[in-house]
Length: 338
Image 1 (cartoon, helix red, strand yellow):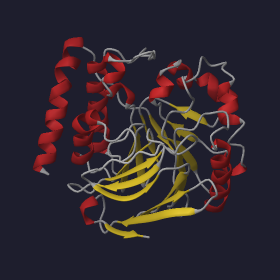
Image 2 (cartoon, rainbow, N blue to C red):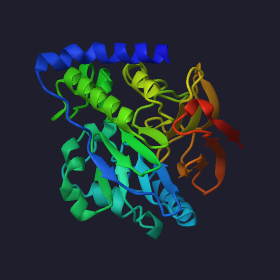
Image 3 (cartoon, one colour):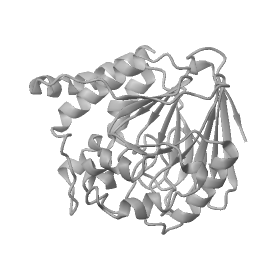
Image 4 (cartoon, rainbow, N blue to C red):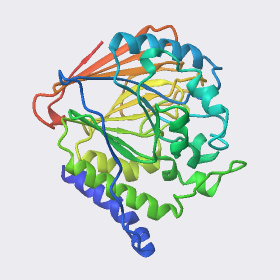
């Protein structure tokens, strides 16, 4: 714990100067309420890296999401970003919104709130369009913000805007243009975000604390680890008892366990184009890796969290569960692997 506090302090101090010199105070993260069911349970699906007008098996993934969603009676869907390829939306009137979202996820079980973060491809277009309430008038399911909290009583989901952390997008964008409106300057934005996140996680009284971002923290696939997140974001998660970090970015399904903390890393980025054919070693414990399309389900109650990965045929590829023996004590997990 002492090492975690030191790491978090170093991460926050690294960016404090940038925030102070700009003289802007941090604001609290927006908080949405999505109560658990009457029996205290919650069920949801997680999909990422999907918006391709139904191509690259996006439609097949959507079909199976509908079937699993009906079977589980899901409460909502989480998107881990890269919602529209290749360059986000052109504006609020871009037909890609309906062609890649409304017209694809048509199953009755998926007519629930979708909580979304932005990915790097989303920032290549009009990022503000995805944040606009205009899109909610077109499809009320679509709830996208940069960073925010969804409180579901037994669990707090902390959605984090991870694209600005990646320095290469700022310094070496190549042929791409990134929409940094409302984000620049980078240092101030990240410092304020980390401060807000730290305060929100400290105040959380939920049994489970789950952080959702687009970029990988740990991964054995194409993009691998994201060094900026390991340096700046991970210490905040460790200090505040985060249970799981869920992301997309790598177009695969994977589960990695931290060797120096109770945190579990889940990648659900198989919403459309996949099969990168890349595997690279990781120092943490790899429990599962699938280099193809698919999605993930998560079922929660006060004592147990169960994750399941599915492929485009609806096959259950992998299931893992974690049980708590005490309130907000990730170190006392008992995990089952199938």
